[in-house]
Length: 430
Image (cartoon, rainbow, N blue to C red):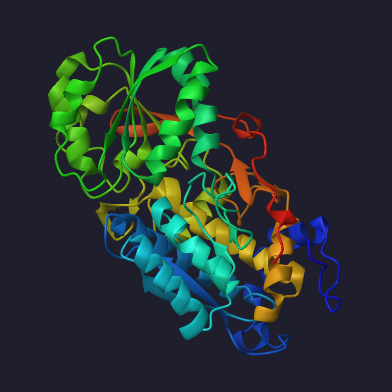
């Protein structure tokens, strides 16, 4: 690891966590006073790589709303080191090649301090190498195991959302103990789906079960019925995770194909993100189970932090836009933007970040973080960050469809999600 710049104070875990826990108390100051202690009035420019178009557009729209809400909260509270955040958004089309081009624009054209926001894993994998070459810190909220696997580089971090490997590992005991041990998988044929394909079999086997079939479907597919005859008759659990604009068609056709004889279903909520569960044709989902990164419906024991977060982003108790009940959010994923921005704030303040010369210090500050307590910065729940693998770990939620709504029935521990390190990015030079 390179040494920290001598002009900076030594970065400590306590310092990083202290800044992470700071609320928006400065919002009570008059506007003229909030930024007077900054060394410069220049904003901190964050390049927001957003999926405005392509198969990730529904996610991108809600990632944008969540980003705007988090930035408003942070800026109303005095910004970062007394400087306001300015978001520079560029559409990557949910395309890896365009993703790399967007990262280059952030660094060379927009002069951004960092890049942030990416969701779809194939876009992350296509963009991260360029971020590393440009020495541009790249904070992603994608769930892919590509960060913690060691595939990427020291400039790429995922501190605001858990990865698929940890998720399926934590889900497997519930699946095998509650639903069945012979599992057939349906997953999208690209990086995110491969994380499920590669990690679920071992997790199920560790619980005495077996994945008996794996069915890959192109994420741009518009009809799915032709794939369903491939599901073996002995299937006891059908595990599904699909993404893209045709997810409503996928779940409708699944119900039409099986009728009342469907095996127990366990889905990742990706198959229903931005989709109203009350949509005609989805009645067959009653009694089925879903993984959720953050429960879409406000639960009976809703925390004050979930309530604050919903109100800030403009989401009602059913997970829909407060201005349009038919506009369903991507609630299980978009919290990753909110939490990542708060980690960036904490890291920059712990590092005394003042500009691009401090990018290495920023990364080291985030690497020094460990415990992230539940709170305004982390409304999804408490987390544990692994600075070596650049990956955060947190609670996972299993919900059951009851009366047309998702009710949480199981919460994993953070310990359920942990696995041995596969990389130590801190040993890589800057």
